[in-house]
Structure formats: C-alpha cells, structure tokens
Picture (cartoon, rainbow, N blue to C red):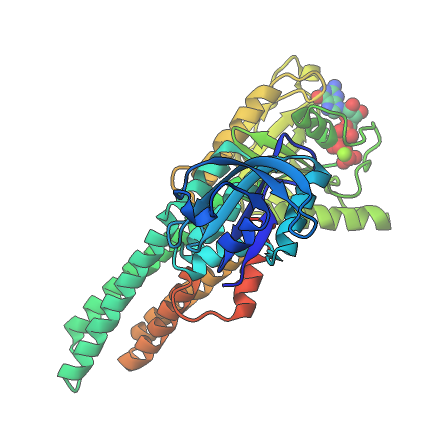
Length: 452
Ligand SMILES: Nc1nc2c(ncn2[C@@H]2O[C@H](COP(=O)(O)OP(=O)(O)OP(=O)(O)O)[C@@H](O)[C@H]2O)c(=O)[nH]1
Ligand SMILES: [Mg+2]
C-alpha cells in the first residue's frame, strides 16, 4: 500500500517525538531524509542507529535522533516500516514530518497503521479495536480488560461460538440429506445445542456490559424525596461542593453528573431532583427527568431522612422500580447515629445509615457501592465491547434466538438453518473475516488517533 507517515506521540511538547512510516517504498523515501552512513536496507532490521535528519529539497539539517527499520511482514502493519525519534518540540517534529511528506509519503489517516495491520492479517477486527480500547481506558482494570481483548480472548470466545454454530449447521444439513422427515431425536439434540449456544451468547453480552462499565463508566443515580440530603451526599461522595445545597425543598431541578473512581471502576454519579408531586412546571420536568435517569442507571441510591421515618412516598415510587438499589438513611447525626425502624418493603435492599453532613458512614457507603458494582459488573469475566461490537452481538443473539424459536414452533428445519447462517455471517463480520466495505472499515478506524 502507498507509503504513509505520522507523528505517533501526542501533539505538544515532550522530550522526544516518535514518527513512523509504513508502506511500499518507505526505505527509499526515508533515505532522502535520514542522513545515514549506509542505504537503509543495509541496516539489520530492528536495530537502532543514530542519524541526522535533513530537508530533502534544501538538504538543510532539521534535527537528529535515532531510527530503526522493520521488514515486511515482520512489523506492526505487516509492511516495510521505518520509525524514528526526533526532538519533541511542536515545530521541530512537524518539520521532520513535513520532510517525509516532501520525500513522497502521505500523511496517515486516523488509525491507518492499525487498519493496515488488520488488512494484512496481523490482527482480526476485534483485536484491532482492543488497541484503541487500551488507549482509551481510564483505569488499571480497563487497561487489563483491553489488554485481554488485544491478546485475542474476545476473538476466541466468538470463534468458539462460530464453531458451535457451524457444527449445528452441519448436523442440520446431514439430517436433511439423510431422511425425508428429520427424526425427533435429532431435532431434540439440535434444540439442546442451540440452547447452549444461546446461553453462551447471553454470557458474552453480559460480560460485554460488565467490561464496558470498566471502560465507559457505570451510572449511579442518587434519588429520593426533596430535602433528604441527596445533593449533600453527592458532594460528600465527590469530595467537593459541586451541587447546590439549601434547606429549601426542591433545590435541585436538573440532573447533575460528575465522575468518580470507585475501586478501579469509573462511575458517573448523578444527583437528581427530589421526587414529589408538584405544580411547579420546572420542578415537575425535573422530577420526570429524575425518574428516567434513575431507571437508566446501573445502580440507584435511594436517600431517606432519618428524622422523618414515614416512608409512604418511598413505598409508592418503589412499586414500579425494579433495579439494583442501596438505601441510605441520611442525617443520622440528628438521631444519635441510630436508624429508624425499617419498613418491610425496604428490607430486600442493603440499608446503611450516614450523615452526609459530617461524613459519618460515607467511607462505608463508598465501599458498599464498589462491592455492589463489582457484583453487577464482574471484572474477572468482563470483556470490552465497542458500541458497534455490542450492537452486532445483540443482532447475532437475535438470529440464534429466532432460530431456536422456529425450531420450537415446529417449523421446517431449513428455516432454522437460514437464521444460523445469518448468525455466522454476523460473527464473521464482527471478526473481520471475509469481505468488508471501505465504508465500514473507515467507520471502525475513525475513532483512532493519527499515528496508531
Ligand atoms: N443535620 C444534617 N443535615 C443535612 C444532612 N444532609 C443534608 N442536610 C441538610 O438538609 C438540607 C437539604 O439538603 P440537600 O442536600 O439540598 O437535599 P436534597 O435532597 O438535595 O434536596 P432537593 O435538591 O431539594 O431535592 C440542607 O439544609 C442540608 O444542609 C445531614 O447528614 N445531616
Ligand atoms: Mg438537591
């Protein structure tokens, strides 16, 4: 492919900048800029050498530094490559980059090096995406999970599902070929195998959701009646005065969000408007929004007031609320650190007493949140999926589920096999096996930075 060049280190000032070139003819292009003692092809690949870098037109010296070469196919992209480091100044690194462009290389598109690695069979699409996930990870666990994806763990799971589907398809074909009517026992067997694959797919999606939480963050919404201390608790968990706190009920009207890290998990913490019936138009919109936010969150913190142990309102809105929740009894500084009597409907949740104002119990709450989130999102089995990967996985699941459904309805077995063929096609698309259009590829690699 045509020779490309990019600065791979971030823009700005640093000790050094790394520039990489890849593609056909990069050695002769680089030769015009790198003032080396021998032709670049005469150097042993993967050995480091010192050289001056010059402008290929004026022969003026721009900078000096180290360079090394890679021979196709033993390189990141699978092509001939040259890499070098020069001084990390904004202008000097740009001058060296421009020198390579003058010498005949074109500026790389975002992610073009990794795209070439994929096109040259160095990585499948899922592993290529793992490269980006490592760069984007915000916590150690995120890096760990992305690393496993780059190493091929996610691809292996998908390949296993593909193998199983192909096996089932083979059995279906065989039973169609050998008999007019497919035998009940065989149908039963195929059904069982499909159920197992569906379970495996469900686990894959579940693990994907867990892994995504470590990359993109989990959502935790603080909800409750007005004036119970939601904003005070929000500030206490955040460790700074972000939300406005007053003694007037109905203070918070819009959803406020801030990010915190709980035990390696990035968490988007949301403060919401107090839940109550109101005739104030603005507050009403806020209340509706609060409800919606809480429903979309991964975990809710319901705050109640220890000094007002009448929980009828809470019972009312918990009726149509079904998701993981922790109940925080706040303001226990006003009740001698004692909890009021907890009504039965609250007993199925974890209940903890805190004083958001003086900080009592806040550290314990933080730990409790972390524990709860780790049960929802298991870091041991988590895998990272991008938006595109997750939506493909969901479509794939639908095909398998529909195939099983048709089988259960007693429909002809070739209809089932149509669904399974579509499922395997989706799998191949996810892994990047087979034909992919330029448009799809560009969409996948557009999120990458230039030089990766
Ligand atoms: N004594 C005591 N007062 C608290 C505590 N937490 C909050 N308060 C007080 O309770 C009042 C309401 O606190 P906010 O944090 O604004 O309550 P809120 O739930 O966000 O209220 P809205 O936004 O109106 O729904 C303020 O006067 C706080 O100082 C606490 O733990 N102890
Ligand atoms: Mg508030």
